[in-house]
Length: 466
Image (tube, rainbow, N blue to C red; front, side, top):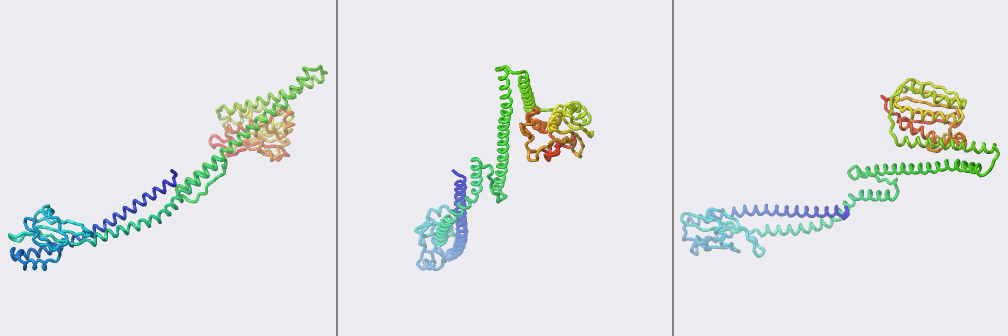
C-alpha cells in the first residue's frame, strides 16, 4: 500500500472515530445532566407528596378506604402516585403505567429508590419509599414523566448522525487534499531519484519549506550534488585512464615500429657501415627514450602504492645536498644555475624532493633556457620554493594540462630529448604526497616559473594548488 493511501486511511479512520466518539460523549453528557435535573425534580415531587400522605395518615388510617377519602387523595396529590399496603397490594393509583411491584421489595424501609421505565415510547422516573405515620404505614410511589428528555436525546442523536455524514462528505475531499499536500514533496523526491537513476545527475528539488520534508529535500539535493561530483570524478578518472592507455600505446608504438624496422633491415640486408651506424644510433636513441619512459612510469606506480615518511630538514643543507645532482644536468647544456635559499625547516622525503626538483630542472633545460634561478623564501605560515627559467615558456592555454601523464607541449622536441610527458606528472604527484601546493606560471614567451609551497611544521598546510 502506498504512503498516500496509508495517510489518507489513517486520517479518515482517526477523524471518523474521534468525531463519532466526541458526539456520543457530548450527547450522553447532555442526557445525563438533563436526567439528573429530572431526578431532582422527581425527588422534590416525591418529598412534597410524601408530606401530603403523612398528613392524610395523621388524620386517620381508616379515612383511606372511604369513597370520600379516595376523592380526598385524588385531589390532594400533585403528581401521579400509587399507594401499596404492607402486603404490596395497590390501594390507590392514578398512574398511566404501573411500576413493577417486585422493586418495592428491593428497597427497604426508609430507603429512597429511583427506577426508570420505558414502554410504548413513554419514559417515567419512579421514586418510592415506605412512609410511616404512627402505627400506619404505606408504600408511596410517585411518577415523573421524562419522555421529553428521552425524545430530546433521540432527536439529538439523529441530528448528530446527519451532521456526521455531512461533515464526512465534506471532510473526505479536504483529507484527500491535505494528504496529497503532505505526500506531494515526497513524490517530488521520488521522481527526482528516478531521474537521477536514469542518468540526469543535475536533477535538484526546490526547497520551499523548513520542516522535515524541506530538510529531506535539502539533504537529497546535497546527496545529488555529491553523486554528481563523484560521477564527474569517476568520468574524469576513466577518461584519464583511457587517455593514459592511448598515449602509452602511442608512445610505445612509434619507437617500437622504428626499432623493429631498423633491426629487420640490419638483419636482412648487408648495409654500408655508415647506414649501419645510423640505424644503430636510432635504435639506441629510441631505446633510451623507452627506458626513461619505463623508469618514470615505475616511479608513478610506486608512489601510488607506498606511504612515505616525511622528516624535518633544514633547507640550507637540503639544497646543498641536492646541488651536486643538479649541476651536471645544467653543465651538460650550458645552463647557469643560481640559488638563493633562506634558512627554514620543512617536512620532506629527501629522495622524492630531489626527484621533483630534478624533473623541474630537466623540463627547464629542455625548454632551451640559459639561466635557472632557484629561490626559497619563508612566509608567515609556509615556505615557498620558486624555480624560474628563461626558456621558451608554456602557452597559457596549456598550463592546466602540463601535469597530465604523457602530455607534451612540444612533442617533436620532447621526443628528440627522450621525453615522455611524465616529468610534470611526477612533480605534481610528489607535491601532493608532501601536501604542498604547486603553481606553474608562464606567458609562453619569456620562460616559466614553478612555485611550490610547503606548510611549515607549526603553520599547517598550504592552500595553493595547481
